[in-house]
Image (cartoon, rainbow, N blue to C red; front, side, top):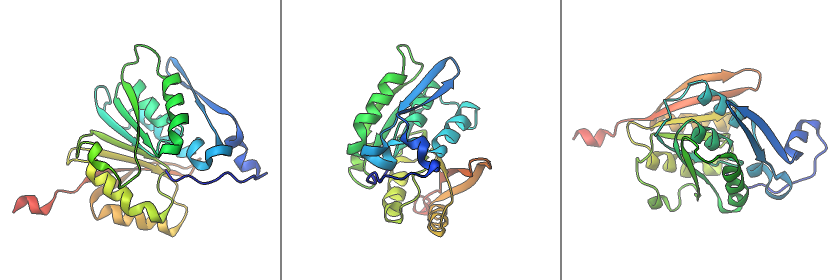
Length: 220
């Protein structure tokens, strides 16, 4: 997730981002994620897409996560990865280096001893150092509100391709704010089979599931 400097804004629409934390009840667990808009901007606040994707997973919209290998991209506060771990997945929660302290703190404080799954935090800048992650090594790739900067589209697609096998599911939750967001989906469809699996009208959040298209060269 790109880091944008904090700019003072009195808009009531942004007031929730200025709160120090956000709390959720997840089954028998209370999940509390800290936010730090002032220091790290958009990378350190909880966006609606993360909430919608977490609820979608909790309600069984994703594959059974118990024992599955999951990676979250641009994790920010880490809510999505935390929920995946509480559902039993082995999760790698990733973001760029400046976001890792807050992310690590949230993951550590919200995964109790004996948690069904586990989560580790790792630095990942899209398109860079991908050899550190096993190619096609994940059952599920998650991303909440990571489609918004056009300069990141190519490295994001490269990262999704590297992490995915033909059996990997990719779940992306996002708003479609601008024409460029639609262009990203068009690019994604060139490499993945994409379908919309949920639209949350109240929050205006789309959830897309993508699966890698077979490589035609493999048939030669």
